[in-house]
Length: 132
Ligand SMILES: C[S@@+](CC[C@H](N)C(=O)[O-])C[C@H]1O[C@@H](n2cnc3c(N)ncnc32)[C@H](O)[C@@H]1O
Image (cartoon, protein in one colour):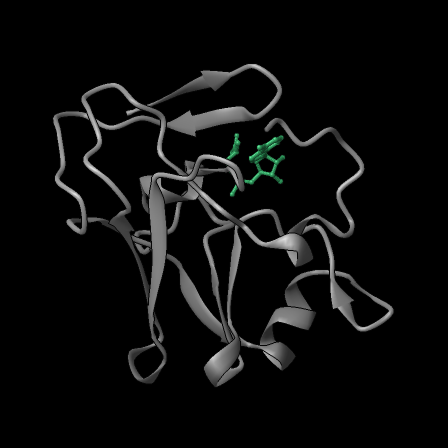
């Protein structure tokens, strides 16, 4: 389920309950390498910009791009917002399969907003206010 959250745009909210360590969702999108990505988004000082829904898999130098909301590969996980102070999801990566998914860091209740820590790099070119 998604709805607006003040200061963050849309957010993803859990329907039902999940137990700690359960898989909550798989990050859906198109898997691209840097050359492919740089044809799609502007590159400034060697950094991809304007790619809001991008997940970098550092281990295999690939990116999962969920920028096209009409793509059949893209799903609701693109709406999961950031929290470094109180995330309830952790990122799991299988670089050999170019796969990213989210596990519950704790038991999560019905209606809670789903949050993971984007990491500092994501925010380097962000000129808004990060809601904690
Ligand atoms: C992957 S999108 C998440 C979904 C997004 N909120 C939306 O409406 O589509 C990432 C963007 O959401 C916003 N965002 C996510 N977490 C935030 C936070 N803690 N504070 C402020 N903005 C946030 C930022 O604009 C960020 O670039």
